[in-house]
Amino acid sequence: MISAIPTRLSIIASLMFIFSSCQMSDNRSRTTSWLYNNPKGLSFKSKDFHGPTPPGMIYIPGGSFVMGATQESVALDPDNFPRNASVSSFYLDEIEVPNVSYCEYIAWMGKVFSQTHPATYRACLPDTGVWRNSLSFNEPHVTDYLRHPSFKYYPVVGVSWVQANQYCEWRTDRVNEQRLIDAGYIRYTSQQGEQHFSTKGYLAGFYRPPIEKLKQRKNLEGEILYPTMEDGFFVASYRLPSESEWEYAAQALVGRTEAGVIAERRIYPWNERGIRFGPGNHQGDMKANLKQNYNAPSGVGTYEVVRGGPTAPGRYYKPNDFGLYNMAGNVNEWVMDMYRPTTPGDADEVSPFMGGGYLRTTLDEEGALGKDSSGRVLYVGDERRYTDNYLASYLDSLAVQSNPNGQVNNRIRVYKGGSYRDQAYWITPGARRFLQENRSKDDIGFRCAMSGVAVTNMKAR
Image 1: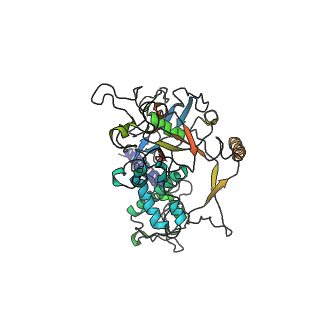
Image 2: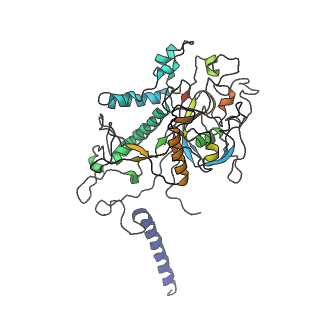
Image 3: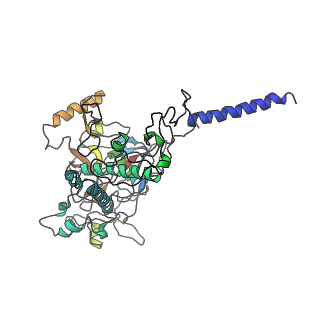
């Protein structure tokens, strides 16, 4: 009996150590042992994030693949040769951003800015005039396509690359605001002009909505503690996908990895090499909304032939193996990348991306964070040179600024996917084209992406 006492004590001590270790990792700093989330002491917050898949998005597990053209270019362009690439996990919209979602954005912008900052409101409006063609009767689309309920789930078009990025930022703001409301911290409030919720503005202290009394916590100075990024309420920012992410998602070679590498390739985002269904109930039907053949009238895609098109609703055609719709045809889609014909040879193999330089915040004369005219955090181009690679890119940017209308300049962006106006060559995932970032067309839309959120409580295997 006496020899059993040390054993019991050691077991109890071990359990207490394990319990204290768990408490330390969850509630206390591992380096100072100060309590986290303590308004009367160290008010620093440390919480795990277990966010669900963002609404309307599909989780895309990262991997390595062969990026680039799968067919020889008729013009023998050297800007898209095959090369190895890898991307991290991310989320991507299941469908192209539809008219109803963009109209929601327009309505919010109109309510908040139309009276106080009309230029800010007008900047979000798509160009419905892109439908006009002197040799086609498209006037009904000019007036009806964006707002008529019958087109609510059709992809929005007439949106420039700049406008698509602004929509992504607005979507981030609305999702984060709603998460704070759902958590019981704030209520819906009337927002006008500079007094509106934006994620960056809120975190910078520009906008402070009233905190519900039951959720109020104060520090030693009596100041109300507002939820911060460390609280785990805020989602990662919505954005456009990079070209490599978009192409990886379009190929959708899920389940075909060997040693972590996808060596196979697809000409189209489906298994078969053709663009029509084989034997079965849908034999002969097109698999995407594209121009059927060379003799088809210009701009007449598959969907228009059988309906009244020209674009198709978001879920009309079958999705690819990731569950993504219309990654071929229907409308082209903007991606983040700036166009350079040398990108395939210059970009990194890991998460390849051609940006346009970095942005940074500014400070006013009093040392406070700078605001733009609408009360949002102001960002300007960052000319600091971080690496040799960036130095080369920066000098290249200076060189092309003197030729703003040339094929290569800092305002040209890549779009991919093909559209109802295009033949089969352009609907292959590797195909790429480009357009000025402030221009729009009746066959270019977009979908949003989000970086994969890391799991914060992973344990060693």
